[in-house]
Length: 375
Ligand code: KG4
Ligand code: ZN
Image (tube, rainbow, N blue to C red; front, side):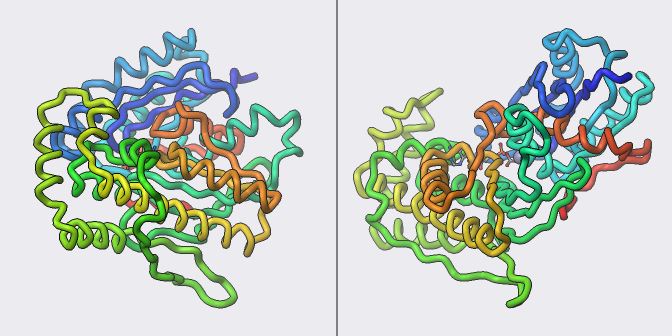
């Protein structure tokens, strides 16, 4: 009889994380060290620095996850690790550690797709709430929206095993990437999502109208629900140029560089109304686009349950508008709790659980797959 305890390890981008989760449901510990502040100095993630930091953090993070959960290594049923997608050097730190640890402890190794992890960050919550597995919908539409990804998946469960079908994706930038790039070109800090989210409350979302091109790589019988976010970034840049906003942006960038940990009031006081309107309009357009494509897909596939995850799922306007739309259509929409919405290892351990039950183990030849696909 096993303990149901899985150690999850995540190191695909700029977070080194380890967690202990029981039976894909109960989070006993969830330890995350972020390198955000270091990368913020460069305005984005620097791969070489990321790998070095992962190397420095991996052992203490795993030790801390075991300590907080009060679990001994020998009590574990398995070791789960993110195999991709992500930065090759960063992924390799987690994978090498997990392989060595699994070998030393004589435990099975489970390879997890990072995107599947994000989906399970929400599903593990429904597992906690449902009295019986039969209460869970058999088919779910999952929007994974982060700094690196904007994907729509149909996720279905059969005999406890999950299968995924990709039914939409961005053809260029991810939504979070658009947030970060627009924040950067407006002279705001990195990462841009949380700043734009909060500043948007102070602008008029209808002040500037942005249009999205319709993209559909599918056919009439099998349509896809795709996204494109590079156009809006260019449109914002053009807007700042035609409205002569550059001096104001340069001034804001310089002023913010002198403040160690700027507060919302600091940033807001450096934004005039025109800038706040532009920020609010950008967010309104991006969220509107995510909403339209997601609900069109839900309609087409007849699903009643939608889950939204990834860093951008923390966005307030996104949550409010998705909830309102779902309520109107009689659908259910769920988001991960805040601690599980950005990169973490609890979601990796949770996604590994059905694979563990089905004996889907990785071998010692497991390697990093930076472009790993799901479905
Ligand atoms: O999932 P995540 O932590 O890492 C990736 O796998 O990418 O997502 C980070 C992304 C960044 O682009 C960040 O700007 C965005 O999520 N983000 C947000 C918010 N919080 C984080 N975007 C919009 N609104 C937010 N509140
Ligand atoms: Zn992620």
